[in-house]
Length: 326
Image 1 (cartoon, rainbow, N blue to C red):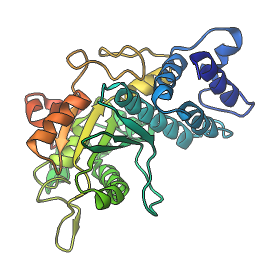
Image 2: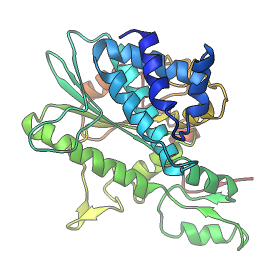
Image 3: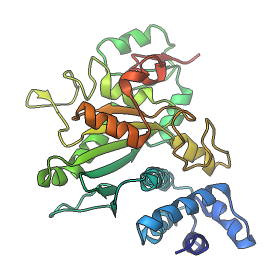
Image 4: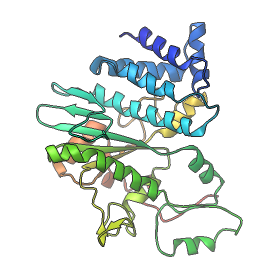
């Protein structure tokens, strides 16, 4: 399937008479030109299609299905999630693996839940799950708030009340959303780990520029989900998420949102779904969960990421107790 065929498939499915968030973006195909977001989607699907035949048709159907309800925000959030998945898969497909077999939404056994991508290599199997934060409501809350509390910590809210007016809003931690990401990924990876305990599993969290939010939820010393003091416990101890080897946090969801608003990418990104070369874009944070030093290095290279320990000189990558918005 060539690029022109893929663009026609997308246009035919999106421009079907039902209201769709991306109808405006795909409509220029009728006049012989292309919106830059659509060009990025089509180019990405064309790249993936070479290694995963049938992907473009499956992805376009998923994207087109989010239609029929005018300005329905849950559909918009799902579109951003789908684009986040494409952003990650496009990068992984481009990696020069030795004799890889890619599997879209792999399954095993009786499990009805599956990660986004499986990569079968001669010496290992890798499974990738992608989660993207809900953008609109949280972004609006954050923009209107005087203070943000990224970490669940005893006494912090009481402290915040001393520095804000009673009618000013406060943004609370996003740790429940991040916890749900981990639970979902851990459940999806479990059948593959049961078959092969050496399977490599990575959860990719696609956030926006405020990456201290998920990092605080994961690593703050008082209640971080990956610490011994995690707020999420079972049988008196912290939940271990034993089926996840590592987490990657990328700052990219705002790039996708910008594209839907006719705004070009920023911060070294060439197109809305561009992974970006390491050193030319803002760092992606690699956070080990159940992994060794050798595996950490392999995954950092694969994902063009920096280990979280190497990023502690940058405030964005450190757990924060609270953030004042002036």
